[in-house]
Amino acid sequence: MGVTDRLVPLARWLWPLAVANLLANIGIVVTGAAVRLTGSGLGCPTWPRCTEESYVAHGELGINGAIEFGNRLLTFVLVAVALLCFLAALGSRHRRAIRLSLVIGLGIPLQAVIGGVTVLTDLNPWVVAGHFLASMFIIMVCVALLDELRSPERGLAPGRHRVLAFATLAVGWVVLYLGTVVTGAGPHAGDAEARRNGLDPAVVSQAHATSVYALVALTVALLVVAVRSRERWLTRVTGLVLAIELAQGVLGWVQYWLGLPVGLVALHMLGAALLAAGLARIALAVLPHRAAYEAQPELGLQEAAATRLGGE
Ligand code: HEM
Image (tube, rainbow, N blue to C red; front, side):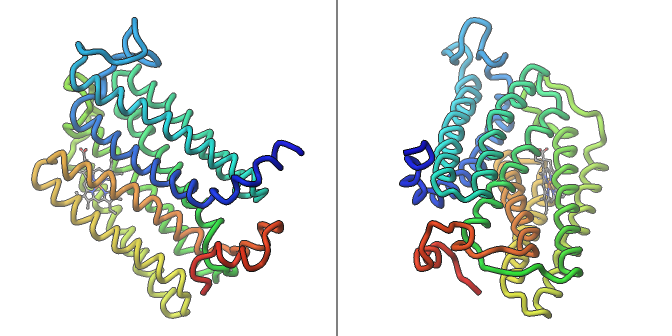
């Protein structure tokens, strides 16, 4: 019996583990928000050790040390989930699932290193931005894995749908990037001493908001073509993403006018993570998707059908 044969029983856990991967990667964005917004970014002043002498936080580092160290520990939970998911994918012999879960599994230690670099550069705002955007990318890959495992069978969408969907994805990335630039200009650096990017917060906030208007316009256009051509799956996904964008846009303005209260900023980061997931879903919805039984030849047709959502 080969190694992958031994992993076959794990295959039944692939879906819940893929869901856990997504939830864990969204969750760490929120705990990362807690680190930044409580000014705990340098709670452990060095990396990979917490202090020069110790790998763990101790009492003298206070609550900030506990918060930052707690976030570091969460990395191990993410690694465990990603590893189990990869093993389950190997057991399923689903090639794309293996590749996607491997990318997720490699992305997490990479993020731990980027997180370490943020500490070693005293929270350089451009490095912090890269750390956040890398999480958005991993979330998108988690969504691609879920989409691969369970989503309606579909063909390639018409050219106009594809152009709009990928333009939405591209502008979505611009919105996410500009958001991190606003953060780099703003007051929540993660530590009172950390330097800022020196840009005018009002000007970059305006640029960020303008990119959001372009994103909403593209999403509405995609929704219209999807409804008109009776693409039910694309309509559903795009409608949901539009709702996230609108909620996130209102939240963005409210936090701006209220002077960036930490609770709202944390919600805005959660909203960004949800939007990243939605943007990936939109791009995937215009690409062809094979039925699960084709991708998993060892499963019976009935079992495969049971692993799929909807099926419209
Ligand atoms: C689809 C809508 C939106 C998305 C996806 C989005 C996304 C983001 C992202 C990714 C960040 C950076 C988070 C981080 O670096 O930790 C951010 C920050 C920010 N966004 Fe948005 N945003 C949206 C709408 C808006 C709007 C309409 C405004 C209004 C001005 C706004 C104001 C801000 C501000 C002020 C920050 C900086 C918060 C801080 O200093 O920590 N956002 N946004």
